Image (tube, rainbow, N blue to C red; front, side):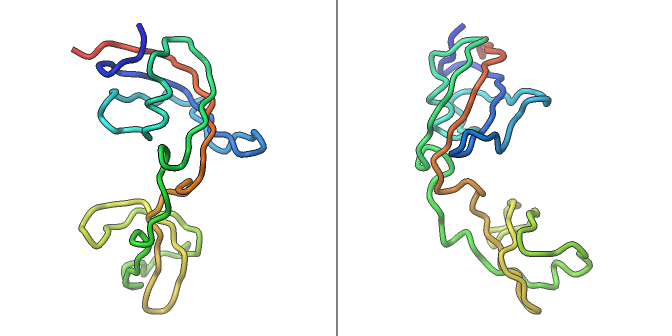
Length: 144
């Protein structure tokens, strides 16, 4: 069965840097699964899988706009440092989950620490970057 707009896809991926080195992978883990058309994976990845079948192995180059998008200044904001009291491992570069100003939980990276405020960045670590994936389609099932 080929991947179309009415199926569930399971796949393994490796994300490669400009030198072809693996920077993230699903190998040695459960495959990633998603329902097509639901917006659960980056658009370029889903588009690149259309028409593929179980067992297909291929590489995709995805432009930033079809990946994690462009860097957004509004996703950088300050949080009262008191919220982090008791965290012994708080340091610049730490990734953690916080509740944003809109009341939603999101993954952020600590970018600046002061006595009163902690500045965090909720942009995805790969935002603004073109991406290169190596993909293997593991399973495709038709949705009812």
